[in-house]
Length: 155
Image 1 (cartoon, rainbow, N blue to C red):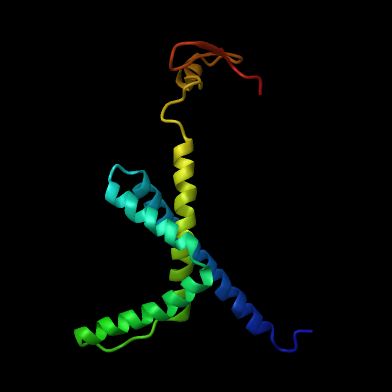
Image 2: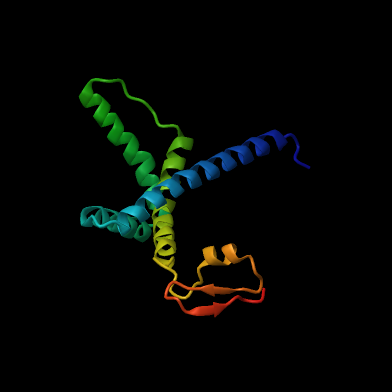
């Protein structure tokens, strides 16, 4: 059925998995840094990452892929020429990882920022679990942060 192409298909699947895992790892790192910057008190960092997420999410992915693959190659070669170094080529897999990580890092930035903002700074209506574990009673009564008694839920 595959007529001798099974090894090529297997190699392609392994490269695809390598690209996907590497891109997601890079995107998560960029997303966490971006979310921390957007939530920081530094207006400069917040503005930089706001521009990054707006620009990256607004430009089509294919345009960014072509721009980063060819534009980054040309920019690095111009830099190496000005420094007197020899030119080098970026591996297509590395360019793909950088491009996909950069693109999805913008989406992860907004995802992580929203997740961090959804967690309350202090539980307004939650009960104080430390007192529950000290009592070791079930069903028990908790004492919340504002000292209102709230009964334990029946799980």
